[in-house]
Image (cartoon, rainbow, N blue to C red):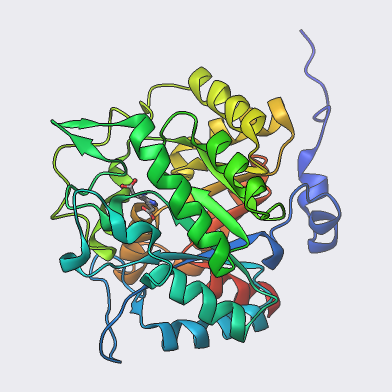
Length: 330
Ligand code: PBG
């Protein structure tokens, strides 16, 4: 066997200079890819940090509006609101969920009044309002599907009425997208978008979020009867297909980093607008290590976000959004 005098392909040629690296770059992250999830609360005007999510705070509506203005100025296209509901308002029937003047709906109205160009996304699931902490109505220990959908539809209509641009059903009940779409059309909200949490896994990475919205204490049991088994991939494809057929405009995979294979399959199979949620536990993991000096925080933040684009995502819900936007614009 003769050994070639030089390697057949020198991949290092296109990596040799910054110019060549830029020229051969396959994927780019931009501020247009970011959706910023935020936590809103009622109560006195004071800082309210979330210990398991360093750098993230629950914001009063006034503070949230100022942050929304900053986000829009940075070029972030959308913000996603999660309410920290007063435990006294949590019931088994979850009635606060469709109260037109609940915290989330008041926040939507305030942001749309101050920064109309910023798209506002909302969360549709009963867990912030449920004395049981579950995303659906619980009776005799069972999370009921069809009864929950009736509640979710009322919730969707109240949010659309408040001015939400994108509704985000994160509940994982079967048939909710079709029911919501029909009711939205009937109510005249034909331009309200739905981003379905189509492939949402029963994940341990949601822990810090449940602290942030005060659901950790309330939740009885786990969410495995409605959220997906982390072992499954084909099922994600079937769920995305179902939700697109029922009228979802965009679909989401959640969590993000451990599920990039799902993002790629979804994008390749349907070509639909595909999003990933880099969830609270992923944020806590990166931020926690960076705060201890174990990782270069800015570097892993940008690398992790770019990875979503490489995996086929059109955008990312990330608590890093303002920080990443500042770096992208620098
Ligand atoms: C609940 C909901 C969850 C998240 C978004 N909506 C948590 C859950 O399903 O328990 C998690 C987001 C995050 O962890 O950042 N409907």
